[in-house]
Amino acid sequence: MTSITQWCKDRNISEVEALMPDMAGVARGKIMPADKYCREEGMRLPEALILQTITGDSPLDQSAVHPADIDMVLKGDASTIRSVPWAREPTAQVIHDCYYADGKPVDTAPRYVLRRMIELYADQGWVPVIAPELEFNLVKPNTDPDYPLEPPIGRSGRAEAGRQSYSIDALAEFEPLIEDVYAFCEAQKIELDTLIHESGAAQMEINLQHGDALELADQAFLFKRTVREVAMRHSMYATFMAKPMAREPGNAMHVHQSVLDKASGKNVFANGNGKLSELFLSHVAGLQTYLPAAMSFFAPNVNSYRRITKFLAAPINVQWGYDNRTAGLRVPVSEPENTRVENRVAGADSNPYLAIAASLACGYLGMMNNLKPTKPLEGSAYELPFDLPRSLEEALANLRECEPLIEVLGKRFVTAYTAVKETEFLSFLRVITSWEREHLLLNV
Image 1 (cartoon, rainbow, N blue to C red):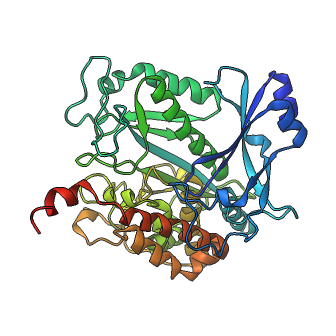
Image 2: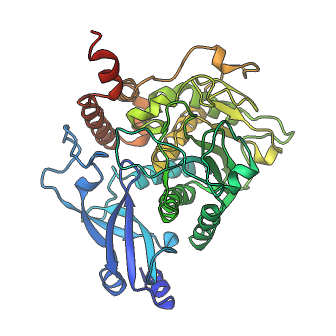
Image 3: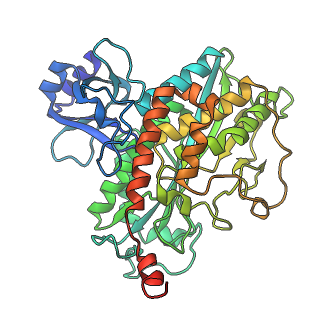
């Protein structure tokens, strides 16, 4: 805490936003006077905060919740402290780790789940390297949930029509917003790589620089918050929903991943001759084997499964191939030292901590068990059957039956996560949609 205290003192910080990600990746916490925060060396929050649904309800299954509704002790990670560039007064934000009063980590906390996965790699002398790519839509402000979302008006005074993939001029329509995104990210040390206009209406993709898995999850967590804030300052909404518009492509969070040897710093995915290593092939095989069971971490909401459809840049199976964007697992063209696999399954609506942890877990199980992948696919994966679950209910059933994945992610965590998601699914089933009213009301 001393370094956080000194950081705040050096910058005359008056307030601290003390944050933690919940199961959905929503920022929870407190805003505190800086002197109080530093004096108390963190904060306390109810453990139940982690285990609430996206609607703020408690899960029906309470077996992973302490019966006394106890507090957690939250300790700030000094490496995560950043300024809040949009705050009116000097404000810091700090991401926290969660502990019980006896000092043990809260094993249901998403940030701990990723830490645990990184430690399992470290036990083998490995260091995972991650590079997320996040897609999102800009939309007109919409206060009526029954009304479909629409693209916003750009500088030209017109909304986009048709596909604008990689269009520089389409990006320029939102230049003031983009400039603010870059400025706010730079102020927060969120390292952006490239920005493109995706194929959907007012759909963007920003790639983060590769690096440490936990650091990149933190950056993705803060990036989503930043983009939403910037959009509202420009009288728009930014959404990371997996499928916000019915006839437009969905939003993904592609996860590029590789593994370094801790001792040498070399990429274990490539041999000395530049060819793919056995560890790489086993990593891919692990992803192929366990992605269907891990699907609820990559597609955590009922809306997520609307994105998983043919011919709209989303995978439908666990095929892999060289530079094959139709496959769920793509191996980009690269130099041997940059050999990696791109997991294209995750939606942008996923919790980055859990999606990255689950993706690493699948690859880890493959490496530990010397699994063998299928042959790389050369044609279109869309011509092959679906391998991935088609609903949240199916995905959760797969997860509950996968003992190897439960073991590496933590049994208590998986119990808590499935309880939250099952409650969300039941809440959705109580909603009658406009499609049902339109097509069934007078016809059945």
